[in-house]
Image 1 (spheres, rainbow, N blue to C red):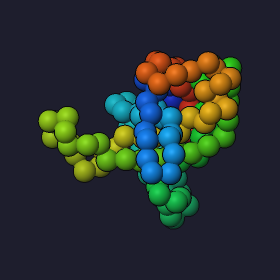
Image 2: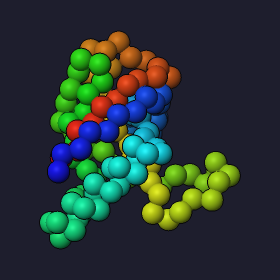
Image 3: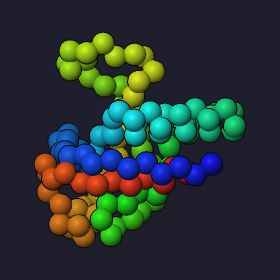
Image 4: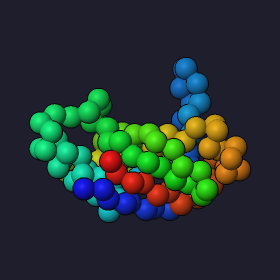
Amino acid sequence: MTEQVRARVPLSCWRGERGTYHLVTLTGSPAKAIAMHERLRRLEFGGRRGFGSVKVIARIGDTGWKTSVFPQTPSPSSGQAIAQQEREWILLVSKKVMRAEDLAEGDEVAVELKLL
């Protein structure tokens, strides 16, 4: 049941009390594919993973790593009506990946996810 998801998305930065995090937000058809994968896994195994996350092998450029993507309800500030089940998915990008791929906030990155 392994599925590949690809997207070109901007790298953004979130600054919180405990530090700065770089991440990409997956929306649209990639997000729907991840959500469907999560639902099927939940039905197959009878439960959710922590925070509703989905295990993935992520790749940006030549750098790959095993991690998870996390669901997030889109902010209502977009002005569009959003269905309850629609989600965005967040992929955190570590400093190690940022250095290896010479990335900076605002760069558009090609992300490949192998859903596990």
